Image 1 (cartoon, rainbow, N blue to C red):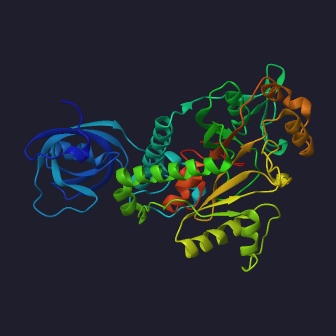
Image 2: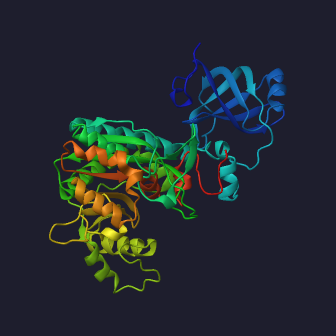
Image 3: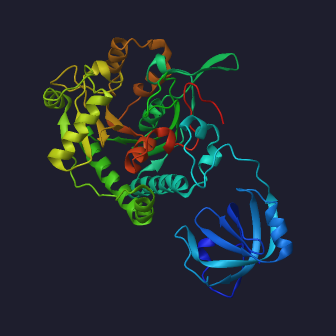
Length: 434
């Protein structure tokens, strides 16, 4: 007999075999009630055999067992956490007996986030935590499906690089057979190589690494990024593409997981209207002058400014998203293209979701002389990017692209406290384990 997921225990008087974690044991002497939990659901086990009762009494909470029994209607109503039937146990197999837990998860013990991250595999056992990664799964599938339907192809750029792609300050160095290599801060250089190869429309899903000595709710040193790059397009057209993509991803999440999200997090998924509100950075700064902001950032937005802007946009437009465009070149990457009639201002954008930046995008500078000039203005060692510059010497289409942060998106969507909660295993300046 094969295993049956607990949520599919549907026919009373039928014999089933199920497996999972022992969540709770209630001992009534000649009768035991056990809550057994798998990834999706829990079932109450009824144990009345003296031999099996003795075996169960030796089992600890969170031990992993397999049981076989007959499904029956309970004499009284069961709690909401379990299916509406009881499984009367006839056989038991103990796969793994659990040691004493570092903290309780049923009922949930209040412990520090740091301790939960240290024992992340235990912290993740609760269904609301597993739900986060079901959201990740639907999000990523929707991202890929939306773009494939529009003719995009997928690439897998290398994560070991011979030169910088963003800034020296955020690089992880390592020895590569006697040479210095860097962990990729982004897939940017190789995305542009693919444009030069004639790929035209493509996307990338993969890890990036930033040596950022930061302890905020939004930063991590290794994270997943979704990248989109497209030839023969403007940054305005790219913004229209992304907002349609966001709507599609949210529709898929709502359809497949909306009810679960509402039950677990009290969040009702709302589908935003199109187009998204759009302001230039200059317009945003004028708006923010009317608010008491403690930390203002020249040429960019501080986290406090982003938060206040998000609140302003929701109040004015009833919208959770806002595009901010036209950032000064000095605060953007050297490869961002500048306006012909507004030198020093880039054809770029950020997308904010509930007051947090989740996307940075721009048109890319593809003219070799201009690209070299901008790199020098940003203090980039031209010799260190010679291979990158070679991409642009043999014909290159004009192009634009963006990088989207799914962990930040999910954090904001579910109302989580930090990207640490939205990440399977978090990496930060002081966390390299587990």
